[in-house]
Amino acid sequence: MILLGLTGSIGMGKSTVATMFRAAGVPVFDADAAVHRLQGPGGPLLSAIEAAFPGTTGPRGVDRAALGHAVFGDRVALRRLERIVHPAVAAARDAFVRRHRAHRIVVDDVPLLFETHSEHRVDAIVVVSAPAWMQRRRVLARPGMTPQKFAAILARQTPDVAKRRGADFVVPTGVTRAETRRHVDDLLACLRARGVRYCRPCARSSSTPKPPA
Image (tube, rainbow, N blue to C red):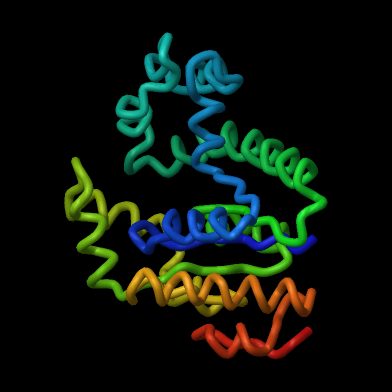
């Protein structure tokens, strides 16, 4: 089994690419969805989050607005929250991978793969990327988003150029959807055929090519 780490900064189109992997029959672990389950009604993290951030949970689970307010701009509070959430997400991911071990390829969709230093947990890294102007346009079109919030989020994320440098493969989304899908299909075809972490044809399609292992 090849475990691909799928990542990308906010607004880069990672969710779109994850959907393309699923459509191609690849199991995809969605870390964001796991967080919603863990923090939803009756979720196992509610008591720990409430103890650390009083008033941020209720019958419907975590009050995301209240929790966001509690940690926004506060690095210490954010790290406290991460120490609660990250181990639980890692356990959910490990269980998902075990359930799908019979598949040739499994994708681990990790928004903060580089930020949490999780590179060693996957066999190869796929970074989703788009031009900065397109990223900004996409993000600022979201309800409730402001330039200040966008800047604060970017400040907490590894820069796109560094992510592309650390990637084994880069999937572009600053192109047509059909072209992005072709990149995904080519990558999967190569990995399925060759069974290696780095396949030369796919690496050539990446903006950060690497030699075969």
